[in-house]
Each structure stands twice: as structure tokens, then as C-alpha cells.
Length: 224
Image (tube, rainbow, N blue to C red; front, side, top):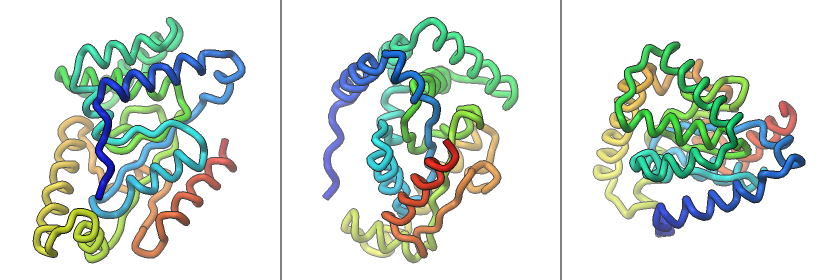
């Protein structure tokens, strides 16, 4: 059984408090990177991402949390207010660059998403799952991971995690995969499965979750 996600307002309040505690100069020096994780449904990508966050002792933002933050104008404003004037200016520059380079026409949701992900990246030291974060954050500021697995393994994981039949699991994978592809295509004009968008692609069909997370942590420690 999966642990229920706390209400979004509680998650936001706790995160804002953590950021406020980090507004010291000695901590600022450490806040220089984020990890983005894209994953095939059923591949265990979220588990890899959470393990990486725990290993590095940094914040973890799941896709649903990022989505809920971006879905509320009030919440996205509150998140952005945690940055100082220099940070806000940097985020505005990032957003302008992304919109221009990718020829985007942001709707209300994308505007909030840009603000939320930009703010998280501005604070740094975080792992973000999904929502096209790797397409929004400058390459020099993030390390992007794509987690994949053979469809048979993904079906098996879905059956175990959600108590589904093989047919139900396969149907769920197909729909989720289609939705994610459509989201990235709509907002970022890109193919989510193209490996060129990622620094590292991991196959959890041959590498277990723990080893995958350790590999990411090891690489980051070498690179940063």
C-alpha cells in the first residue's frame, strides 16, 4: 500500500520553512544543483528519485506535488516569494529564455509551472520527478536522469504495487505513458523518450533500485 500524500498546503508550508532555514550564506554555497528524474510508468523511477534525495540529504518533489503547486496561482506566488530579489530576477531570465528558445506559448498552468520549477531550481539541492523539469532548468544547473524498464517488468511492478491484473496493469501503463508523452509534446515540443534530453538513462530491468540510486549519487559527487 502506498503512503497517502499530505495535503498540498501542509507540504508547501513545510517546504517554505525549510527554505527559510537555508537562507544563510554558508548554505547558499551548497545550493547549486538539482536532479530531474523522468521515468517510464512502472519502472520504479520515483523510488530511484526518492532514494537519491535521501542519499544526498536534499529535498524531494514528486510529480503530483509539483502539479498541485502549479495548479494554484496562490501557491505558486507563495513559493516564488521565498526567493530574494536576485533569485526572482534569475528565475524571470530563465523563464524568458525557455519561452524564447522553445517557442512556447504558455497558458496559465504552464506559467505557474515555470514559476514553481524555477523557484525550486533557484533554491537548489532538490530532486524533481516529472512535469518536464529537465526541459525548464538550464543544463548547467541540473543533472537529468531517465529511468526505463522492459514492459514485462513494468507490468509486473504495476500488478504488485496496485493489485491489478496483467491486463489492467498494461492498460494503465499505456495510458500513463501516452499522457506523459502528450504533456511533453504539448508544452515543450519534445519527445520524452529521446535519450539526448538526459545525462543518464538507467534500465531497472537489469539494475535494481538501490544500485541505480547509488550510481546517480556517485556520479553527482564526482561531478559537483
